[in-house]
Length: 467
View 1: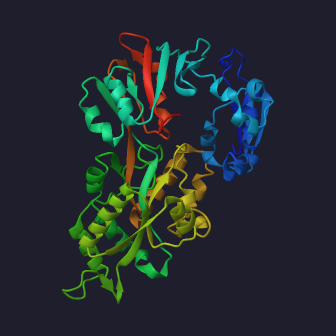
View 2 (view 1 turned 135 degrees about the vertical axis):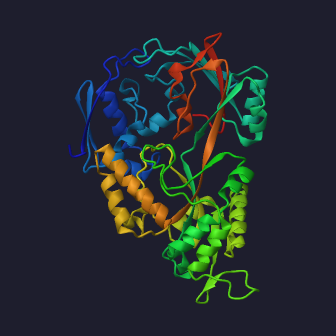
View 3 (view 1 turned 180 degrees about the vertical axis):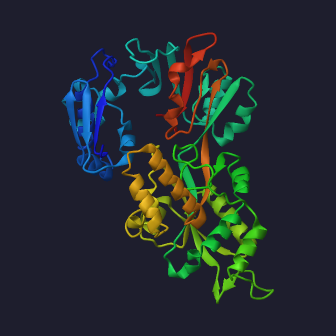
């Protein structure tokens, strides 16, 4: 097995909601359409699929042939399949604007039964149990989903007995939600890594090339204070570059804990001292530990950046703050390597395969997403091998090695992973959630949900978080 050819057998009992069988032609049609999504689908995704041959071997078997082995390929198959007999005569543009979008035909455990309208506005939907479903039959007969503008209105609807679940518990209702005796909260790690990137190849801040300076900077950060005081406990402290809960996460990597005294001693032992009693900033050979930290221009990131600034000032590192619109921060300042340090949220949604290659491989230093410009050949060999290796145990070993070296070198400083909260009334049983890669993942085990006293579930979606 060279990792370039994948054959998939469809469940022979799978049917679309209209009773037509799900076939290999539906799968081929869906992925071929992705190649035609210019203007609607990211160019890199179109380019990815254009390099892959897709064909139906028979009515129940599909084959994907890659130009070269690529272990994260399976994560790209999470696209929802379309029924060719419904969409087959449309162009991509026609599909986007088609009214069929509000009359979806799928193959899952629930089927769209009706739309809830307020004038011409859709304010909710009603799903009913799909009698043709080939998998585990859901216990619930119906699910009513109501749309609200924000979590406050959704929470009020729960208090009024209008809904049984709330899709997103935001910080402004979290405290109130916790006091509801019959409301169960479910929390999961979001697929976001908040980190401080340092430009390791910027001559103005060449002290970043000293790993002891980088370690002291992380040691001097009170990340618990950020999580508790700014994020109100809604985050998990991160210790590495791979998301906690991911199959590749290595729990035994060395963890750097907050200790400002040890941080000062580490800087001192590396030659960064206070030259005289009046100095507030450490220096070595006339070079002061002084740099500018970019951060996304919003209130939450400003508070985080100011907390970082204060912590580093306490160990005599001077940090200047510069707010930058997020698009400019990513697409201009980081892309052009025009920065010294930056507070960044890496959004890893939809991809459970970690594949750290884009952010840390040396081939990505100049033109890719290796914004820190970490040029480490050993690490690159781990990452390049892991993304073509087909043996899962070997991939885990390679990523474990990567995380250990990352923890030793700290080319970037991991801060935290935000969490996501949703709530369901306690009369709804069978609800569970693991690490999520999109908010819809909270419904992964919807077939197992059941009500103690009835069989209709009334949920809600805020406008911000509807799927």
